[in-house]
Every structure is written in structure tokens, then in C-alpha cells.
Length: 483
Image (cartoon, rainbow, N blue to C red; front, side):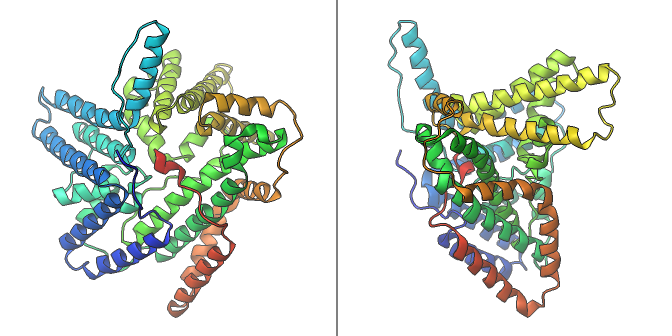
């Protein structure tokens, strides 16, 4: 399979042209909602097709299959056929995802295992590229099917609504992962007469551009990309900084993309769910996962952890369920042992945290009572450090590089490329923004609300010019587009 061609990725100049044209025509067509939705679906399919035609074909085939499976589930709801239909539909979705994302990983590791056993195997190898956005729209489809079986799903009014629910381009590439109740009711309503929450949309787009184009790109181009490719070229102090800088970068990149997606969706009249709630202000690992990639962590809880039994079947079973759930989280991120180890370590961290709560409750300690500041500060530092250092496995290209990185951390070497104060500044600002960012965001919204209508375009131009002036050369690739 050939490599993807030029894509309409945001934020790029190509996307600006595409977005402005699509936005203008969408509002011109708002009087006829069906025509407007048809146009938005065509634009979303064009967005997918520009990455690679096969990606577009996979999206359409998956969407049609899951729409049909949902209708079949509704027809047989309450009958003996309902569960087999659901099971087969979920297997088909996981099979599609598994083939595109994990076939090469499976073949490589099976071949290595057979060689270790002294057996020869000539397994077929294909150059397979996972279709853009496949993890996100597949998980949306699976949630819709399970919720339909549970009689909790909002049903689409038409095939058009369902297709747009899966393909809507602002959230197509990297989420948020929408459940049926997040978007389908909005698609069933008449088009709004004006942009809902314009000031919030402008604030989201501004923060998204600052996070992604400026801050994440600076950190990537000035330290983290090179540090995780060749850790032996950096001093131990630089490697420690790179660990926390990458933790800042992945947040800036992913939450910045989400801010852009939510802001752009608002311009089209749609509200997408919140996906990040200042995760680096978390004081324990459980709190972190309630704040980080919220739509995905909720998906894991609703469709893996709870069906496994959650915490209902005793403590040991609860810890095992956490391990299974977060190992699956690692597998979802990609076909490498690094992702799997990263996910499993988060499962260990959550199990240890849950066990500590259980022990404290056994001792009669009220774990819900307000905690002293020193305890919260210690919990914050431990949580941040844990999340930062396990990401070494997440970002390293293979285990050898990850182990080289860990050795470099404890080698206490002083020779490197020089400590980058700019990276340190961006990292510290990112961490502080998790405590004060909401206040700044709300003030920006209030300021924009009070601007005269004629002054707003000048303010937008000024903001954009400022961002273009301070941004580093080029732009780092969106990390979660790989998932």
C-alpha cells in the first residue's frame, strides 16, 4: 500500500481554505437541514479521502456495516438473537481494527516465537497503513452498538445522521470519541440561527493554536524529538528535562488538537464533549484518568472495566480488572510493546492506588475527607512524576532505546547539547496552566463577549498575527493522528 498523499490537516494553510469555504457554504445551506448535513458529510468524506482514498473507503464500509448492525439489533431487541448479533458485530469491528493496526505486530512476534521454538514459518507480510482515524470511529461504532443493545443509545433519525456522526471532520482524526448522545441529538435538531458560544469558540481555537503551533512545536523541535531518538547524546539533566517536557508536549499537542476540534465544531453549530480537564493538576492517578482523554477513559470504564465486573467481585478481581483495562488501553494506542508496557504500568499504578484506599479505609481513615496541603502536594508530585517517567516507554521507538534512556537518566553524565531554558520555560508554563488556565480562559471569553461586533475581526486578525509571529519554524506532527 502506498503512503498517504497530502492531507488537509489542521492547523495548516490548506485547512484554513477548506475550513472557511466549508463553514461559509454550511451556513448558507442552514435553511434546509438535510442539504446542510449532506454537504457536511461530503466535506468530511473529502477530508478523509485527501489522506488516502482507501481510508475513505474503509470509513464508508465501516459506517454502513455498523448502521445495518444497529438496525438489526433494534429489530431483534430482547430476543435470543440480540447477543449473538452484537457479538458478531463487535468481532467484525475489532477484526477490522486488528488487521489494519496489529497484523504486522502479530506476524513479527509470532515469527519470533516460532524461531525461538526452532520452527520455521513463512508468514505472509504486507505493507499495511492503518486508515486515518480508524481507532476513533471504530470505538464510536462499538459504543453505539453496545448502547443499542443496552437500550441506552440515541438512535439516528436517518442514515445521513449516522454517517455524519462518525465522519464529522473536526473530531474525525483524533477525537473526542463521541457517544450517540453527544452528537446525534444535535444532528436531529434544526440548524441554529447563529454560532453558539462564539466567544468560547474563539477562545478554544486561540488556545489550541498556541498549544499546538507554538508551545508543542517548540518543545519538540528544541529537545524531545532528538532526546528520545538518541538519548546518549544528552546529559542526565537534559534527559530529566526531556521527560517532563514530553509530558508537557503530549498534553499541549493532544489537548490543543481537541481545543481546535471543539472550537471549529462550535463554528458549525455543534458542541463536542470536553476531553481534557487540566490533568496535570491531579493529585492521584485515579484523578488523572478522570481528567485525561476523558472520552476515552470513560469508554474504557463503560465498555471494558464495568463489563469485567469493575469492583463488584472483590478487591483482587478489581485490581485484575484494572490491569486488563489499561493493558487494553496500551494496545489501543498501537502495535508496540512500549505502548503495552505503558498501559500495563498505568494498570499497576491504579491498582496500587486503589489498594492504598482500601487499606486506609480498613484502618478507619476517611478517604473522602479534605486532605492537608502537604499531602495533596506530595500526591501531585508523585502522580506527575509517575505519568512522566512511564511515558519513556510510550515515546521510545523500541525497548532498546527506552532502556538506553533509563540508563542515561542514572548515568549522571554532564556532557550534552546544553540545557535549553526555553524548553524549561514552556514546560513550567504548561504545568502552571493546569492550575490557572481555566481562570485565564474565562477572562478571555468575557473580554471577547464585551468586544463591539465591528472590533472582533480586528481582534481575530491581531491574535492570528501574534501566533504566526512567535511560532517556531514548521510544526510538529500531531501525535495522536498515529492512533
